[in-house]
Image: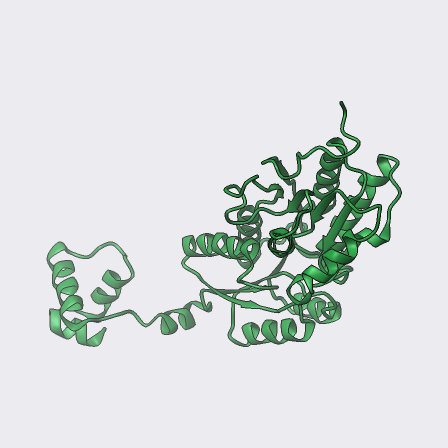
Length: 332
């Protein structure tokens, strides 16, 4: 800025006013400063400015997997809100490892982020998170709550969505419905299984544990698990996939099989609407989750001390044909 001031023949204060977009700069001086900035290639030192303001103008985002379509949409929504507030987002994946999640939170904290949005890994130390909040950290949880911690949380109603999806399959005549979900340590996986079970029980259909698979889809031998579930004389006539990763894996495994199964997936995914038939899904609004979480976080960053909020968003059933195949008990 000293160089710009010397080149333009103005005071350092005038350069500061131009750079920071302040008023009360004569037009001729404003033009000389902007020409000097272009000539010298000046860029404002953001780090120095942030130190003076007492902020790093960054927030941290710790998710299970930033490559997952749900989390990528969530991340983009957080970025948009942060950009409007002149903040940037540091994002990282916990890989559902509680130790890695803690290390990431500590690392972001050491970098002085103004706040954190966290999808808590299963088994993460709730005591550690509580101590971070008690120490004054601004933090919002997404996708999963943390038991015993009173903090802003934004969720999707996974249980209700899974119940509605199962009811949809039952309504089309299916009584033997297999469910493929994530590992039981994942909050959303157990909620979706609970919704699936509730729909069966409400329809008077016995819950059969042999039709339920609960494991991490990325490490599961999909074809072997599918063979096991479909084996026997009383095989399922419909599959309910508990997340988009399971949907993709199951559809690949089903591609070369002769089974004509109804299929419904929890969470939409790319190209699901162009397959033949299109894939019926229970859709959740990942962008809304990210946007609301970011808005809550920035409220806390700016000193809001109102009671914490637990926001739970509804899902939406999108019928496209794959789940509407009639089962053996379809109304005639």
